[in-house]
Image (cartoon, rainbow, N blue to C red; front, side, top):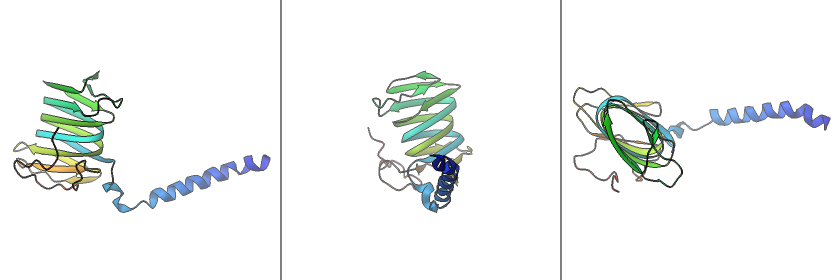
Length: 178
């Protein structure tokens, strides 16, 4: 027994070293795997995001429609700190919405900031003159004011690539169907 307790610190140190080696040896494409983050800061315009995972949205001022697409999973959206049901729409000077997990679809209009982690697709139509800071993982994504763009993060839900190519007018291939 004494031999086991004296070697315990060495065992813990070697396990920690092995874990650190795994983290350092992670392939460079790890950022393109499911569970990636999306960040949009103070972008004025119209946006739709659908995804799976965590999402935190701030609209100030503007309007928001939130659809919880997996209402029986134990996670429910909170809007302004108040738990909501499957569908909720509001407008105002300061709107915050959070969903800790599950599938969601959110439409927004106004000055929008989004933080999401998981898998999904965001469609942006920035107003002319709007500057948007958009990042997928740590990679900035260029967004031109007045031009529509689709940006995937994590594993895009409809199986298409996570490209940030402009969406043609009237394009419904992104699967934004009920």
